[in-house]
Image (cartoon, rainbow, N blue to C red):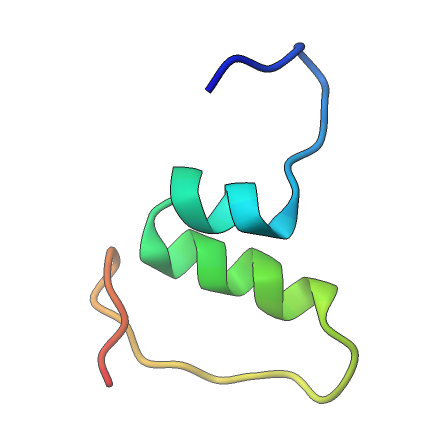
Length: 47
C-alpha cells in the first residue's frame, strides 16, 4: 500500500490492510446502527 502519511483508508482498504479483528471494529464503527458484540481470539473472529 502506497499512501500519503496522514491519509485515511477507505472501508475496502481497511478490510484488506488490517487484521480481521481490528478491521471489523473499525468498519462496525463506521456503520449506523446499534453496537456490535463479537467474540475473537485477538487476531481472528470466533464465529
